[in-house]
Length: 243
Image 1: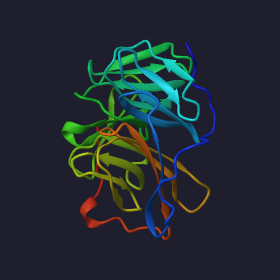
Image 2 (image 1 turned 180 degrees about the horizontal axis):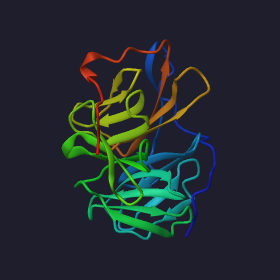
Image 3 (image 1 turned 120 degrees about the vertical axis):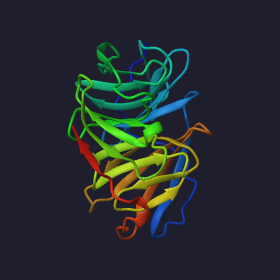
């Protein structure tokens, strides 16, 4: 078993250099294995990708020879740090797992909603999970209780990265073919199954936003240049329903 190391991103293919105002594609890289599903930063600028398969694995994207084999069934999707280790969602059995950084199982619970997709650190609770069929994401406790729920901006929410569900969040929607970044508009993207982002010390800019394309099995990097965008009216308001 090889462990995922905390190594900074060091290499990707530059695909665009015509930086203007707004969202710009700055690079892409092939997934280290088939069926890339979840992506997250372990710490700022340390990126890992979850790949489904007969045996699910988490790869260090900077050094794909470093990977962590997970002791859970295939059918995985979401990946995020938290709870003393890492969280992984599984759509095949509707479970969410909390594992140590070495891959040992800490706990698990059945997702209170069917079809869990991408995961993010929690805001009101311990963990957020996207439910595409409802176009919502749910903030859950470590035991799986619903703490709050929020509507997605599109129509079929698959990818989430939540700092604040009303002001600072990234959403991916394969039906609208867009990635939404609250406060910074949106950009076109074919099949965003998972999204993540890292903050810089500059004024509220995502640098970069990273997206998995579920159709090509590639990982794409986007960066915002210029003035902060106005959230389009079409995004509507992300409303919370507390329970």
